[in-house]
Image (tube, rainbow, N blue to C red):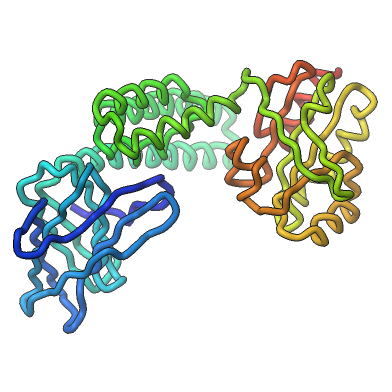
Length: 370
């Protein structure tokens, strides 16, 4: 079975070592159909911040190799074949033998893994996500054809069908993820779920990992991330942030209590942010006399670029930044990993909406202020 090149945006931590003569750990046997003479297989591990090479394995002339993975806890492992083909395996430490076969010399070549039940669980999750995406794409194409043909009734029927099918597929995906927990496959699968919109699901996942893998590094990381997301979910009290203004004065979100406040995460280098700014300017000019404030939080790196963008775009509201890019304390507090990003805070300091821009921002402010 082919396996996609996965590990792209998941928090990971484990220790990995290949044993010597004692052959401790899980045995892995591999076969490369197109081995490159003189090359070695690189075994890599993923931490929360980087991919690290931890060992290399010699390959016999017939393309075979053997190694042992001595792991203190269930782990994600990547086998790197010459930098051309990757195979990702979940190892829980209880496997008797894991077998890996690859072409080795091309990224889209044949890949097969057997003997890893957790990797098999990941395949089930990936299949569920693939079905969701496939159905989504098919119905989108049908809707486009109906709209192009001016068939309003068919278009409306497809839209209704889309929401029904998508809802069922998302529920099926959530269930297959929960069924896999506490396998680490479930953690990867959680990347396909909008956690902020599925807090109940996230709480259940945390409970399953706390019960099945107590004290595991992934369990603790999951608990921490879900806790942080819940802190900035709609209905929660908005965490305070205090950062310097362009003039050097420290401005805090709490100083604006009593107003509706739009926290606007942006940057001079962010083209979508700059394209959105004229819309935000119009809305600020319209509602600034009606208990509406904006707190612009820049994720710029330099003061010069930040101040110039404020002037060029005519952004007359309050601005703050620690000029630390996505390492900004405010970005970490509000779990911002892409911009533009917005949070709307009510006069009592509660988050009442997030992700507003364009028409959705205009509509929400009109709903509030009339």
